[in-house]
Length: 239
Ligand SMILES: NC(=O)c1ccc[n+]([C@@H]2O[C@H](COP(=O)([O-])OP(=O)(O)OC[C@H]3O[C@@H](n4cnc5c(N)ncnc54)[C@H](OP(=O)(O)O)[C@@H]3O)[C@@H](O)[C@H]2O)c1
Picture: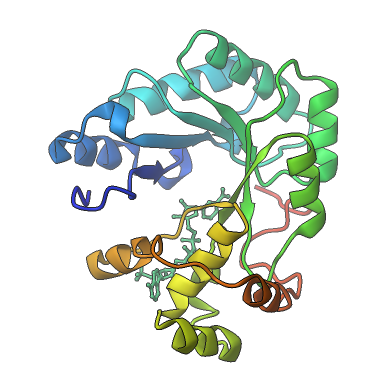
């Protein structure tokens, strides 16, 4: 926990990551008041379904040692299960146990299907999003439904560190490649969650609020799109 950096108060975890206990522990040790931190966690695929989700939520809450979760997400769109899962999510929102609910790795057709059966439209969709996978159609759809776009793997897991365009922009703005990538996401209005286990990189990645990319440079970075994923395809996964 880096209490010196006001902007770094969003913690993204998931039951799958098996680190909820550690995150809860770090939160208590930091002394940062609970309400100053935004905690996201996710229901894993094996726990989907109405009753199962309510149970999984309680387990996550206990492991984190908190009263409420700021944002609870369906981790992946498990066919035949996510509609029932969503009913539990709506209940968790209704009773205040989750402050916001959303989905992760949902494509347009998953969202359309879910919304046919939902009372509440997901507030967030968290999906893989970086310049090599700029999912314009999905972004546009989410925005048209008022679903906030949150991008995972914003640094493309290190694979854009040596890209000539990103390096060139780094020189132009006097920033590191990671800072250019994070700024690109922020300039698009995406919620972004870069990950590092190293203190100096966490600090570096947070130093992005004192500059912006020009509109033309944002467009240049958009042109790196190749539809290239680092993770599984939401239309073709088997876990
Ligand atoms: N919803 C989902 O299905 C899903 C899937 C994947 C990830 N996520 C979430 O998204 C977060 C980020 O995604 P991600 O970890 O896959 O990818 P990422 O943030 O794009 O990349 C992380 C990689 O970049 C390196 N890195 C970080 N900062 C750097 C810097 N300043 N300079 C150079 N290298 C740097 C990290 O290495 P070091 O750690 O060694 O610094 C790590 O190898 C995860 O922590 C997770 O919370 C969600």
